[in-house]
Length: 387
Figure 1 (cartoon, helix red, strand yellow):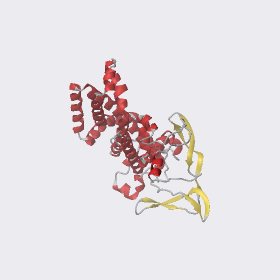
Figure 2 (cartoon, rainbow, N blue to C red; figure 1 turned 90 degrees about the vertical axis):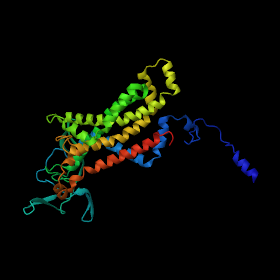
Figure 3 (cartoon, rainbow, N blue to C red; figure 1 turned 120 degrees about the vertical axis):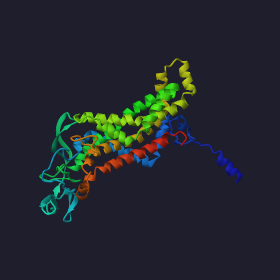
Figure 4 (cartoon, one colour; figure 1 turned 90 degrees about the horizontal axis):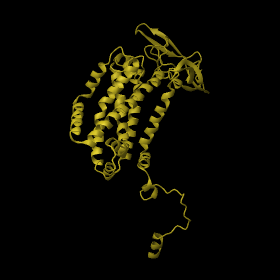
């Protein structure tokens, strides 16, 4: 028995050595020790199934942004005067026991004089097939080329309000799709402003130290002591009312970026204080490298993964900030379409009670914010060298 155990313990693989053979990645494999920090981060991140699924959800959202005009069945400003506050139409596949394909039943409406509102009834005798890869409402693709091609179109002579319409008869689904471009872009642009300020001030405070560190830390403490929401409201209300929608968009983005950088700057400072005493930094100083080069080429890349995780967790707060400001009427304003602008129409209780589908723009906000948080948690765990 002892002989069998000994022979099993000293087993030698008789197969010839293949240098091109890939070893399984593990704590003891050679590929693990030779991998870069980005490879290690990716291997740990993909084991986080929830974070990986959230990353694919966000990738799908952002991949659709350049093509919102094609994906939306209607133009976001088109009004349907005969279908004000129309209820959502359901998609059906079977009609009277036979397969027809994706179709909707048309609406007919009457006016209720007692309750002073429109009453919509569904005509189940006339199925209207939905069209795919078709021509519909005209639009300007990226504001440059006129086109009318759509991925999905309403039936010929019919309607397709999958999420209902608003008070002006505009298709809510199309407006949500168009609003995704603004609401998701403002988080990316805002974090770019915050990232630049956080790296600059945090890099100076962490590497130079001394009075520079004291001044920057006191400035950060002052900014963090101010109540965030009232400060957002005050700065947003200060934007001139006669500004164009584009200027308001950039103004809101800069406001969100200016108020978010102190937390990132403190994270950068703490990392630089630890890294500036390392041997590779001393070697770069002895070789005559400037302070800017040491910070940009040697210090910041060593904890860039931590910064990416921090930035990912900050984007949801900016999306929620824009949504809150637009909901309160102090952010983006029509004709700009964002999720916050759409939720602005659901402020009063009567609209919510009578037309609850006006709250549908809240669903993509919840999905995107949760996806960013899940992905940020996965990135933070993957970037932790001690995890």
